[in-house]
Amino acid sequence: MAEIPIRCFAVSAVVLRPAGDRTEVLLLRRNHTLIGEWCQIGVGSGWGRNDILSVVRLNQVNGLRK
Image (cartoon, helix red, strand yellow):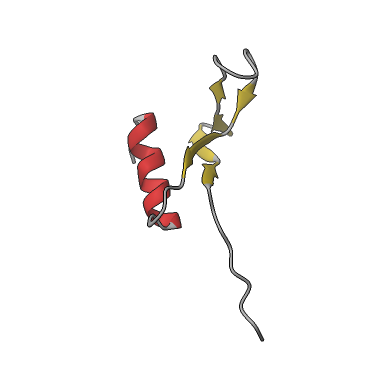
């Protein structure tokens, strides 16, 4: 089977956390484009950065912790 090259320019994530008997979802409110809309968090995936490093960068940019 031939490999299909894939180019990834961005990574988005859905961040969930338990909150008692429910689950909360982390969303960001847009303030530049689509002002006031809610969206999942994301980060650009620069050249030479793989998926895992992009998610780590997403964590750093948004101040998320374990």
